[in-house]
Length: 158
Image (cartoon, rainbow, N blue to C red; front, side, top):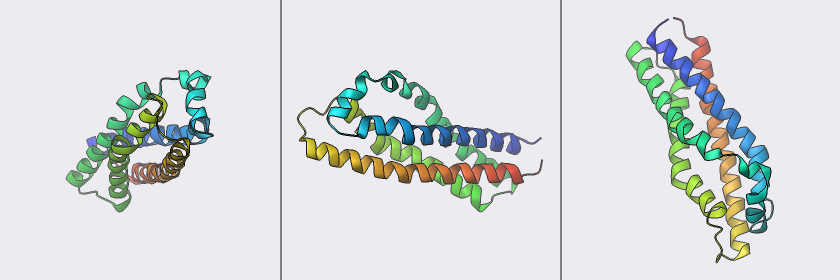
């Protein structure tokens, strides 16, 4: 087994983990806090879902996801095995993590941790709906990253 194969499988496993966690959050966690802002922001704080330390999961996993994608891509280029699915996958992984750090994380922190107390309720509802819609795009990008990583891992010889 080559270093490229090991790196590719590591990235594929991380992409699978991130994809599963993203789908879970999209279908279970996000509806719990976004159903009726600002009341649901406050109500989410007392819900059993909010007692999960989601940030403790994502802090190590998100950078590993992006870095392992870049690492797998670098190993592919060095092995002369670059393929379009892996390139698309790695690009999506890096873009998802960058977008999360630039927009999603600061916005959700403002919603749930700071309460955004002085913002009008209509504006909060609008911002929460936008966050949810954009998150569906982000989840689709994670799905592309998962597909490309898995396809590359399954079709690699060595």
